[in-house]
Length: 308
Picture 1 (cartoon, helix red, strand yellow):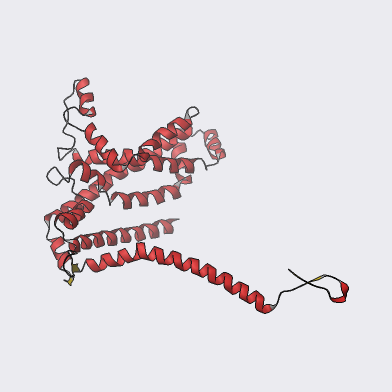
Picture 2: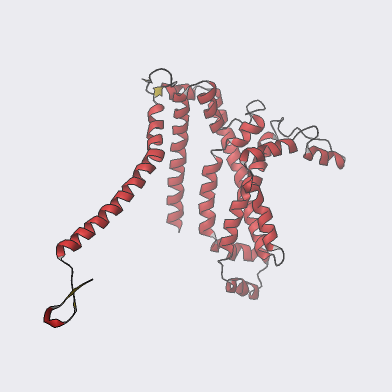
């Protein structure tokens, strides 16, 4: 603030125009400089790997010899691989089963937790605890549960007179066994998000439904689900994208077996990159998965937005 002593009194005068512009220019340059630094870091770690992956999918690369441009040969090799179709089928099967369990179970768990009147905090912590375990530790823990010999599940079956199962060694049970692990490990975060959405529903809606004679099922269908529709739609999309990229459970627990029954797309990609040193074909597979998920996400958002 600037004061002048004209006429023997202090009075406020505006700073010179040139000074204001200089200060404003300095502030803008600082803001644009900070924004540019953030953009450079984001582009370096997010956009450049994406662009590099697209280029690699059209090259023969082993990171020892100079890369050579091979056009669509990597894609042709991929399409001729018998495991390519099996990996897509297994991944889609895992996604379908994971949505049946991983989408419904956390929502119902959140509804139950929302209705609790006692020990609510304890059960919230108990539901969230598995999320705090590292994914590899979770997979190794459940691998012991599934052990056909001294495993926890087979010991429980034998205790009630039932024969044990080959959980991970049978093609009919291996995939659902992996889905159970994934659901248990990830349902904590999803449940808390559902719970937060449920607590935003006005209580007057439930009171009005009860006055109309609605039972628990009708309140769930006509009040709870419509009021949490946006959260449900967003989490459904995120779950599809996440489960299509499943890797840890099949890699640690089954290695893709038995008889390639649990070979997923990312596990096949890992084999191309680190077993066969064929990074070009691995990049081609990642590009295909990226395109499929991108088209699915765009279509899903467009359809849900139109219906909204």
